[in-house]
Amino acid sequence: MEGTLGFLLPLVLMFAIFYFILIRPQQKQQKKVREMQTNLAKGDKVVTIGGLHGIVDAIDEENVVIKSGEAKLTFDRRAIREVAEKTNV
Image (cartoon, rainbow, N blue to C red):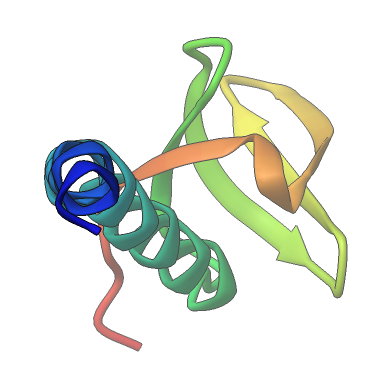
């Protein structure tokens, strides 16, 4: 019994450490990104994963049309990395 406890305790502690240092913060970050992508609105200034800066011109369930200069480009909603400036609409 003592040998089993001595073997399992370090494994449980290692899992707990990995959970609080790696898994939990990553889950929080993913939730934050999903909420940001869900709350996108027309007129928001955004940055894509590829580094394109632009303004949301149109939006639907899965796609976002971004106006950058004179060009309008269509991206998946998941390609938006961050909202640089939120509109007050």
